[in-house]
Length: 189
Image (cartoon, rainbow, N blue to C red; front, side, top):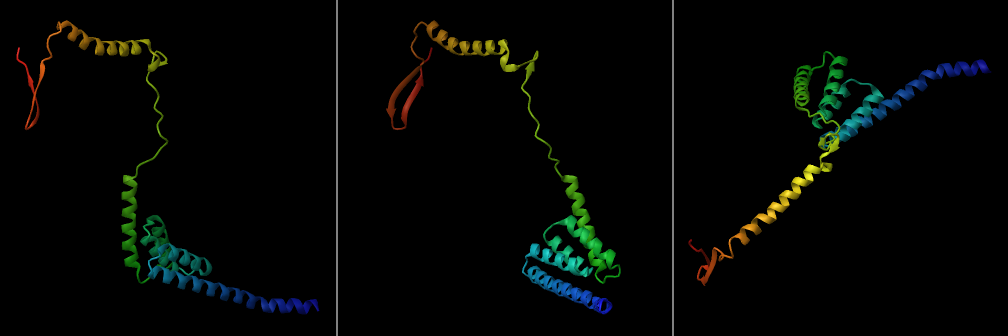
């Protein structure tokens, strides 16, 4: 009885594998169809996702071209280039080889230009306070003395000039309001 069951299992195992392959092919076909519709509608993210799923299920190299085309439309240049390279590696006699090679050259040029102009972002530089004799500048006595002296001079000089003038009349004299507004004139010496 056990021998018959093993024999039956061995005889049926190719059918099970074939059924699994058929199921994978059907799922790959559905993913491909969904990808084609998405691509035609300009939904390139969805198209690439479906084409990738179809490729994972079927391993048909033609799908690599579709993946590359979708990535190219999304401007995922490195991903498109990898897909096109894999496509031509898997199908060296592809009819559209010249077209794909032209696109690969353009992608390589775009990636090279991008790399040449890339700005390297590093950690922000920490700006240290100016240090004099081991202490931050704002702790230096001479800085505060200079600031204080500047304030005293800014206030004292104009006051001293005014007091030193002996109470002379203000050199500005306001005139009458005329048709053009207020007239201001300088008194002569």
